[in-house]
Length: 192
Ligand SMILES: Cc1cc2nc3c(=O)[nH]c(=O)nc-3n(C[C@H](O)[C@H](O)[C@H](O)COP(=O)(O)O)c2cc1C
Image 1: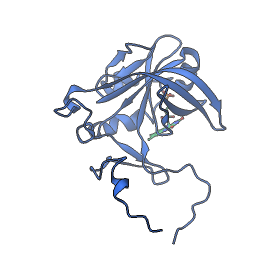
Image 2 (image 1 turned 90 degrees about the vertical axis):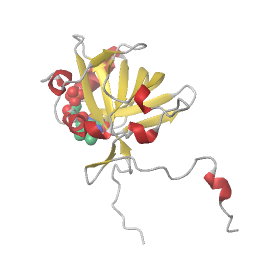
Image 3 (image 1 turned 180 degrees about the vertical axis):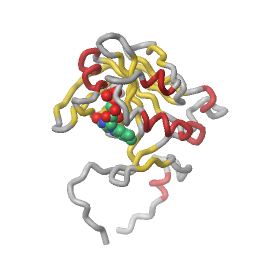
Image 4 (image 1 turned 120 degrees about the horizontal axis):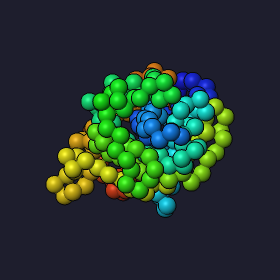
């Protein structure tokens, strides 16, 4: 039996994304966003949804570029802090001892200490209500050399990305390998 929770912004798990921007003065900033994810394969795109009051939202509207850095489990405190404090008042990179590395392809800084980094050019904005959705085209994906398999592919267990759970407001790890996609479904027996 399923219990209804009504119309809520809920999905499980949600990602923990650190959105990097330069503000109008060129100061680097980073904020935590869970409302986001991949939204197109070709061109490769990812969206984040931000409230207008965030410093990041204003910076993104001006600079039209952003990065998304994905923190590992050990960065949970820093990731939470970046979602509690605004760059309008505080230099979060400096406070957290994180490195604002300039993007190679876009006018935005990323968190050099994160195992996965995306660089994005703003392509679309959509006013949704409380949030503006920003769709960015992914110009580059970088993965820490320490988080690659012997074959040179990103290893999720080494990346050890955080995930977020709305409603209960908790961080989780991303779990263990279950099965290969586009493959395990082929073993299912049709019931009719
Ligand atoms: C786990 C977590 C997820 C969050 N997700 C979002 C989000 O998706 N969109 C948003 O506008 N704010 C989100 N926030 C709140 C912002 O990160 C917060 O308002 C932050 O201080 C904004 O920083 P800025 O003013 O430097 O841009 C989240 C906070 C946390 C802790």
